[in-house]
Length: 394
Image (cartoon, rainbow, N blue to C red; front, side, top):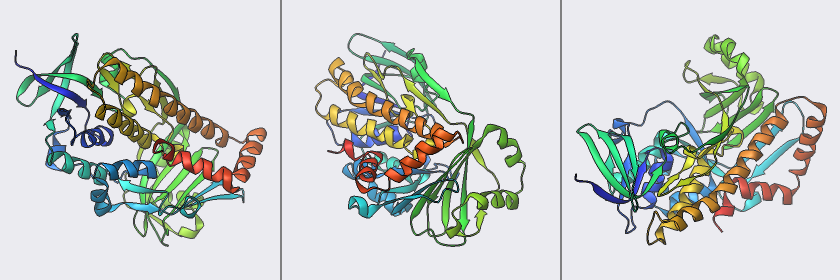
């Protein structure tokens, strides 16, 4: 039975999996990428308005592998300032790029722009792309893994020294390997929409906390913003039943007043239920989890995709130095580097969400003391340093 042998075989060509493929393209490693969505090879990445907050550390990784310039050309909006507030409490925290001596704290990048840049780079490389392709079975042998893949031409058999699962939070690969997870759900739903504002945003992002959850307003182009509006699950049916003018009125009650009136770009509201999930191990023999397949977090600080890119940057650095990409030492080094950083951020975002999403007296007291502390420069800089992912780029 003929089987192609790879050094690294990646399952999942989303933002994290494609970023790994791009990071390995100029190495001595033979790399393959399996992606079930056939439209990706046709340059069709959807146009649903979704965007991601990209931390400066993630930008630095994309710069290092030569894809960031394509994202800038496609439409990446810098965040010069982030304003954090607690409902109607007058105390504000202002995080400015000048505080860290950088041009931007991060960027808001439409997901289709990110995917287009990554897949354009993959297409110009020697990476083997199996698309559409769906993994049907995995067989662990002594020195490699054999993968049975269903393609539009039938069944193919691929072998690899290291199998990487980057197939998202509902990872079929993780379940197939029998890796257990710890999970926590929230009585919340995140509504995602794109709006046009009457006044320009001046590259300011806003995060305002309400008892139902945070409202994030993220700058896109001069008069457009991506909104992530967290509400209690019981509120969702009523909100989805409203017409656009009524939804806009609801948003304006919570919106940054300096942006003026808002208009929805689409009456179709997207929504999802947030949860945190953490795999109890990231590795099995010659197998590892990457990005959302290993961990998810509450979107309160926009860290989900950035944690995935930290995984990628760590793994690329380790693999560039490895003789055998699937050796136990490689897997252990990756697990050691990434497990506690991810768990720490998961617990921090979970605690922050719970602290700000209620009106218990002692919680109000603690969070407002916290907001006061974050107005002090040293505390502010430490927070920004870690949230921007700069501790991973020493």
